Image (cartoon, rainbow, N blue to C red; front, top):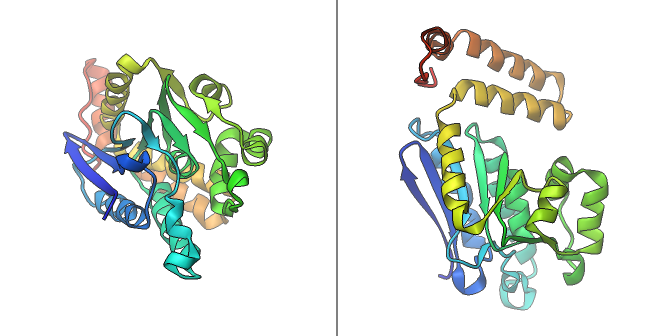
Length: 261
């Protein structure tokens, strides 16, 4: 089997690495399935406070989908449906994760790479990163759930440009349109993003979870029950041990130590 999704842990940070270097980390069906399983498993690990997604090797975050797996002559007439189902399952796992998800993007970030990145909460890029959604050049459709993520990140005008013009963006152009939050020089990229991830992992988990629930409820126009869930998540923060610890740390002028309780 070519391509795999590897999971490692360092302290409170879990790193998910896309490793299919012969194809610039293009996503295979098996990799999509592994990604979904990895994200769901990490949900149950209390020691994991942040999830970092990255590509193996020097060339790419994820260069797209392994389109050879979508050939009906080789894989059957329903290959695209199987692949799309696995893709949506994995991306849904990223979207609903209660833990902060961070895309650490270098090199090629095309198609499926953009889909994974826009499903994440935060996106940081090295200055050698390149972005594109080339579906219009391949004759493929871009699923509605993928368009929704893209639209939420870059807005209508830029989403149309990315999908219709299928142009390539360098890292600084991607930052200018809001596709990534910040660009770092390649030499310091990994250290900077790991520092950011470490800082995030030290924040109050219940507060970050409540923020994600509220944003999802508002941006996705979910029913009132979803906003009620967000309100309950906020209330749980105020009633938590972490809130007591946060106030005590502030009064004592020290760094808080949050437990997620």
